[in-house]
Amino acid sequence: MIELHRLDNTKLMINVDQIESIEEIPDTVITLNNGKKYVMKEDAEDIVAKIVKFKNEIWLKRLSREGKFRIRDNIKIAVSN
Image (cartoon, rainbow, N blue to C red; front, top):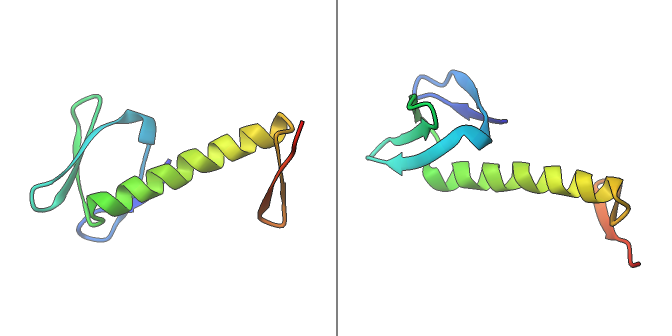
């Protein structure tokens, strides 16, 4: 999940796997798979960057568990096989 902000600056946690679309019309509107829409303060580019960062963190943790990467002091080290 990523943390975003509504126009009134209240925080909202969004499950990135439920996002169907992100539009700027002119405010940023996130539409979920269930049809719910949320108007957000962040622009679409910032939201996509947060999604990419979140997904990358998940994959790095998985690769680390599989022994393909080691994470030490926030430095990612590739392990050759």
